[in-house]
Length: 228
Image (cartoon, rainbow, N blue to C red; front, side, top):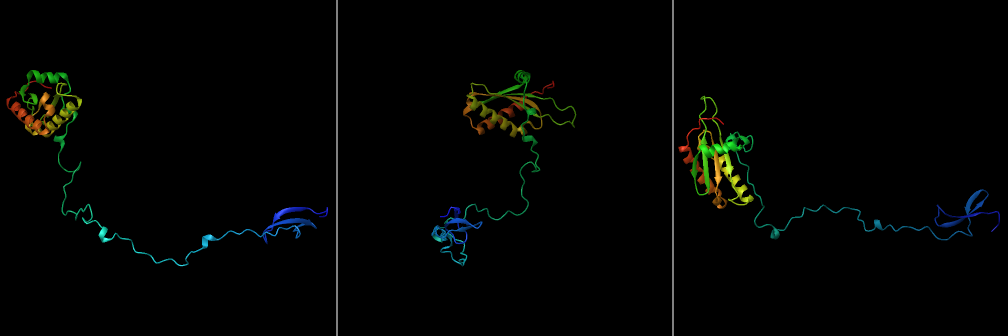
């Protein structure tokens, strides 16, 4: 090699392969004597192999053979929709359900209210319950709305544990709420003391005894002359 030449290693863009470039007359040219004979590597175009040029015909939706189908038929068969006017349920049912609620105003909340029932009310006892009823005076004028009866509950630890006592309270409140018709639009304060056998009593037994005791106390209860 002459001292006036300069060489660099590069890649031939036209023919591919490595080549030694010599600078001659201000331009870089591959030197045939030093150029590598290797050809440019090529990538196998495997991704084009065995690709059909036409799409296969669309197949029908697969179905389960009859031998493997459900022999009982489709589930949740709701049938045809009912015709005519249907009864509506919920807040817009059109029925007056105010008598079935149990609000704060339906409870005895003060100790003196319980003591008044114990001192002046009519006492009637049963196997599971003991009731004290103190009637309210009649409304002063016919147009005045009738007073609502109020309920007070006394469930001591002798009845059972906390779970049993809470269950009895819930049942008695529900029984009172569903049986306001016993008072026939009259008011009064009712205190119910639960006895120990009430923990083993069923809802039906408590309800029947409640109706019997309240009915007897209403027939004997005097009207209170004072006010709440």
